[in-house]
Length: 296
Image (cartoon, rainbow, N blue to C red; front, side, top):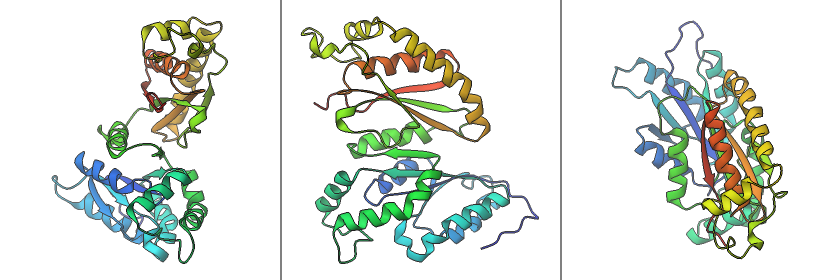
């Protein structure tokens, strides 16, 4: 569908919520609704322009933050999403894409627990449907502005994550999440940068530190005092401080820096806390989040 380029539209903020079936789109949309967003579920992509125009023409009480859930349930309609986004961009309306992801094992477990078929599995297995959907969404995932990995998250944790990303007013400055994780639990899907902290001596092998985490002062002091760690953190802080203005110029609103150690309990946690603090010192809005603390 083509939209007129003659009359500029005072565009509302629009987020397209999409991603893998079973990855938590419904929870995400409910969280956005609780935050005051106007949420439309399963909208045909060709109607995106009309929705934006209606919101722009509304009275002062009309919605200025709109979340639209679009996914493979739309069948043939879904394939029109790319052209609809391009048409909106041509008239000055930029839609952000929030893509929800989870690993295959997690998705299979969720579908089996609800006893519902995957929308693309047909007469095959759930894994067949997941594989077909991943292939269909590959390009869209690569274009996502926000990538949220829901593997291992319960509904409350996912809601908190959505609130951190979308809870404020329109984001004008880059927001950085510094995420600690354990390599033995798998790589975070939503990483923009991956940092390996396994070169640091491991507090796990020190009896008095083993039961503690990187959030405890004793562990943090041990990790941060190790040879080369201060320079390591300072170097990354300076790199990202230099990169931040470029990301903002390109319209990037959210960035995830993932720091891993073996179990995500000691080294990566202490480094993530310190790096987030250093980034804040550089004037960057940064939050430390710890994926695997308490998981063992």
